[in-house]
Image 1 (cartoon, rainbow, N blue to C red):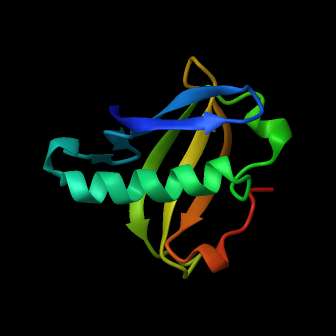
Image 2 (image 1 turned 90 degrees about the vertical axis):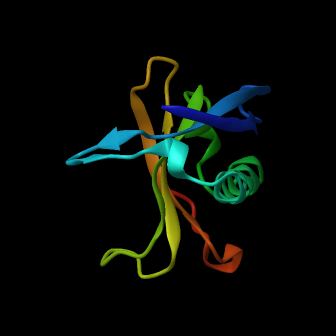
Length: 112
């Protein structure tokens, strides 16, 4: 995983790390090839939605010690809005909850 920054987890009253996944089902991501501007844009969107509570519920956030961006901005059949796929995880990397961070803030919904 590639560390790109931190977000403040209000449910835990502390900052937690944000990573970009380097691999997943059937792929390996060369995170070094992702430009700093793209990393910063992804972090800014995740940070805004995580910290303002529009991404995850407080009950879920209480278990989250880190956030991983599993897919960079894309569209999918399940969600035609351009979004980043993210997941909140425990300190050991176990998934707590997955969600989408939309490019357009007005289309953001909270993970259920």
